[in-house]
Image 1: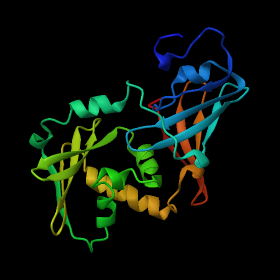
Image 2: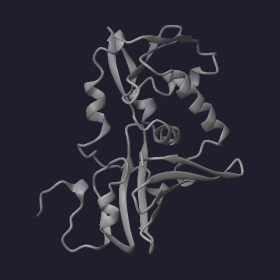
Image 3: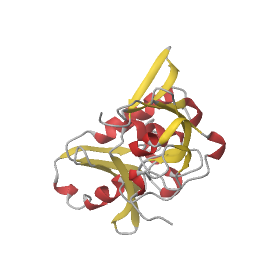
Length: 239
């Protein structure tokens, strides 16, 4: 048994034919691809704060890697490795109410935007079996995390935190609808609603619609083919 930082891979005996990671992370650790031999395969749970899935990656002869999600194993997930966005997101929750108020919206159940907002209200609703919208959110908002807190006594609200832009959106259930407030530097609710409308227009793509591409410099993108007649890509890394 060896103990070390798994994100750094394990150099002895490289290159490997197969790597199976039983912990989820986002994005794909570069060392895991580096230590594969050409034609080698990596299976991992590519999972961020909002969504993800079980991914099978094959390393190409030129050093690039291509992966697809395993829809038939969508119910399988692993515990997050510790160096994730979640740690930082929870430390930054305090004090966001003192940031500038950018949005304050009340949605009644007959408002077209209500369905989008209600997706976040409870853990059960957000983590339901079909999480295809969460995948879309993960690609577009890689720095956003979500938690549920009792801000008003007796009522648990959804709190979405955008670490990069120091912004928090609170979705609070009320007797006659949902109250949304956004504090910080970004119109986060407006951006979330636009992403929801975009996801609907794209046909609600699920796991099977995405491919992950990783080049030799570890630049990672996820793509959808035939999106309005072309390929649409989302960067997973800053490179």
